[in-house]
Image 1 (cartoon, rainbow, N blue to C red):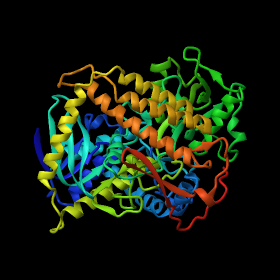
Image 2 (image 1 turned 135 degrees about the vertical axis):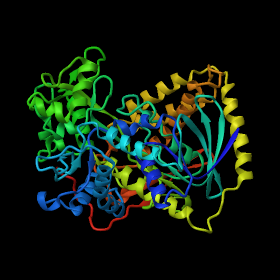
Image 3 (image 1 turned 30 degrees about the vertical axis):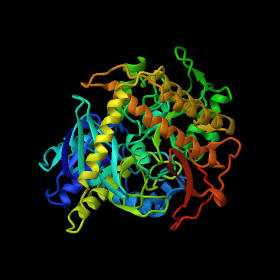
Image 4 (image 1 turned 45 degrees about the horizontal axis):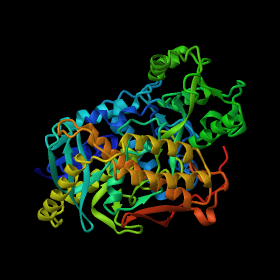
Length: 582
């Protein structure tokens, strides 16, 4: 086992992780040694799949936009569960991030008078989503990755899987990792850490996310005894491609696409007459499922999957080619369907994790439900919960969140590390922990039980799809809880077929499945306890929001292997809850 020492260790290489590394390096003038640990090649991080854009107020005087209006849209979209002080940090920081990316060379689409072009997105009063065609995430990642490569003080550990965080009381000491290519185990010691591993939508079978979106950082924090927040709130993107689940960006509706039922009706007029196809995602997802349940959906012949249609055929073909080229390419290659001429079959799919590791407004991980904040551990991006999205995220606020808190946590970690009196990691404690972890991982390789872990994953995802989806009911959630408990027991008696060290993706998959099982149970427990409908949590028996009893964050902790729930107040600064109409 190799031991490596760093000042700052960043787990995750998406927008948040790379942003944090760049800003930490910049603020320290390259004086701190930084490690980026990623289970993929960094440029394979799921952030490259972001299509729509990054929200921020750029030209308020020209289009009557304002930071206050962006904040209001976000808070209303969150169904009033977002912490409003955090939302104000988001909207104030977002314009700076758009300009920062421009300086790095991101090719933003531009207007005829050479301003950065901004398009409409769901729940946004004003078009404020900056975009680079429908490949925004790729262009942002390329710019960040190229910048990181220029920094001599930053090392990237591609294809290294972190199996545990090393915590000494309320202090982060480092992490234990496995080099997937060789199987070599490595102990990374660090005086500070940032967790930025993305979301956990692979708890579901039909999802827009990459196979890598297995919630690793969230699960590692949970097993290390750190609190999670609002995990019951899982966003379903209204328009995933049927039958694959590939994302069809909200930008397709922002550019003028229509949603049609089997009768050819633009059915959103019955659900959000003022916003139509540009209502928030939770509202559109429920509308689509309602149409399908009412018999006004269509059925995909090969898969038998119910769906509605996203119609772009009335749009100018040049607009589709210039602003939605990847969507056109995906449809042609996947279904042999040209959106210039034929409507696209779509339905909701799991997309984004609103919940995550419980943090304060600075992204510092909380040590318990009410703190204190940990001095040397931060979280950024989708895996962290500030909470800035509350019960429902508005489209294009995710890239803003990753960028804003990537900057905040990177600067925070570097500032901490440059202090003269910081406490150092306990090397002897970490070495002892790592030896035990190495034995545990080697022991998993010897598992020779009777259950196939991939069958367990399949059952888990089907259970979540069926019982923890766009609509939830008490019978279904209780069934999900019971089935997930059974699957956890089965997981104790699995077999690992590949016993080799080199590129043992079987072992990696098993570790990921364990993470997903833990997080699925946390999602279910939080949902069962929340006796209301709010944002993405739509409870059939209680269809109304209950601000008196449930305008609060769910905090989940792992106490002796069992999920313990508690609650924390939502921070309200200016905007009192009101009925959510669009």
